[in-house]
Image 1: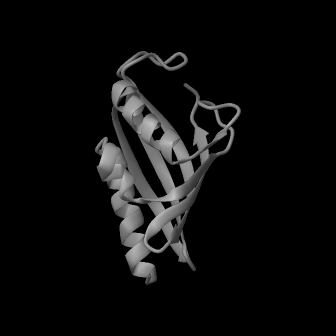
Image 2 (image 1 turned 30 degrees about the horizontal axis):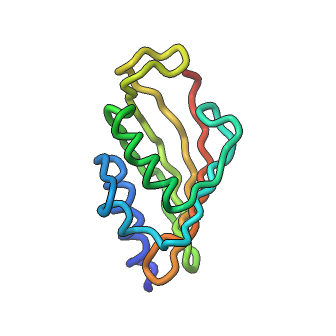
Length: 133
C-alpha cells in the first residue's frame, strides 16, 4: 500500500475510535494476528498486550465507561509500513477516575506507532502519558 493509503486508514481508525465504533466496524481494521502493546501509564500502570479478541472486548467495555473521547493529531509521519501519530487525547468517563469525577474530562498525550500489513493493522504500540487525574 502507498503511504497515503495507510495514513488515511490510520486517520479513519482514530476517528472511528473517537465515535465509539466497535464490533465489525472496528474489527475491519485489524489483521487477525494483531498485537496492541500499551506501555505503562497512569491508567494502566503495568501496561499490557492485547490480541484481537481482547481489543474487541475492550471496545465494548469502553462504550460503557467512556462518555466521549477525541484524538487531536498534532503530528503524523509515515515510515515504510508504519504510521506514527503524536496525539492529544481527551476523554470523559461515566465513572470517577482518580480524583476526577464522572463526566469530567481527562487529558493525555499519546504517541502511537501503527504497523500495517496488507492494509490491516498488524501491530500497534501506545505510549500514553496522562495528565494527573
